[in-house]
Image: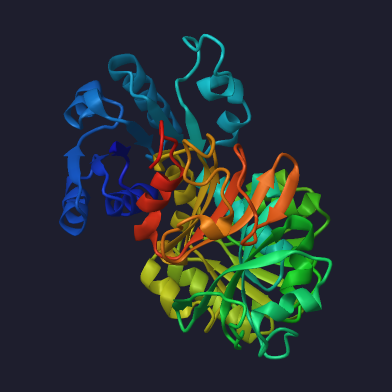
Length: 466
């Protein structure tokens, strides 16, 4: 696909890197020509220096034949105008915009995606809105709701979940074969989608023995997640005492969501004026002005009794240091937002519990749009090396390579696991004898992302197959 990315900040640069690796034709637009040159030297992309909302700049970037315009500058207004110009001048098929301000997001009726069947001449022509702050907030919320999980991904509106968890000594299934999982939980159906041992994937089979420190990805119906997690490690109830650091968009959104769910939230913000502003907006959150790297402040706020500590500022180093301090002082579960991928690999699971990468949380929205076939959702996993996909099967046995066939008869790409199916309102955990029907929503885990193209071909419908 030919994709124009407007804005070379953290989100834009990350999207350019990931989408270029997918063999797409990428043009990146930004006003900072020096930064563009650096990115062009690193990635296989084309760059254009100029204002993203100028018609001539969009034309220079290839607007006439672009498949997607992705507007992710740091200003909502520029993103909206750029999408309007892309539509008015070039009739760009797909227009995606990053919208951050709650004042805009609270009025979806101004955007054309909200009323696709109505004449959209009076609306801003945006097909998909992405809000990285909102996506990351939901990601963290899932981790707070499922203590012990490394990642929780929703499919089929949450009815099916994919969960990553590290197996610990003492877990009932640790040291046993996977086939014993059914004996431990005879009334709960689940499937292990992948196992990573020392950062290398191993194929999950019935005789595979779970070892301590294995990273296990399993799929189950949403209501059964906690029971399955308890087979791999001791699981606590979600802690109610939460400490957040950073009152930016993510920190404020997360505090507002948690306080509505009766969590006990403390929010620390270094900037005095921002702390005062947020304290007036929040009802049940204690807002403190101070530095989370101040050991005395942490002790005063009873950090040792904190169930979850989240460092959410824009400064990677500050997040890492405050999270390390919180862990040393006794916080039970510690998370930090880290934008630099090199930092994530260094510190996750060693000095802090979970490193949250905003770019990996956000990229799924874009992957869903560029995947061929009817892909409802796509999530990038393991720093982009793996992927989880929700695809819809169409056609019949004569026009589809999957419909009307048992899973054991489907030639899945190497390292691919078909984990679960949503059929109507029913959640089915996939087994070898399960037969795929037309309109089934199929959840797949792909260990090697290089196999995605083959998987897409498998779910595409043709006139006939030989």
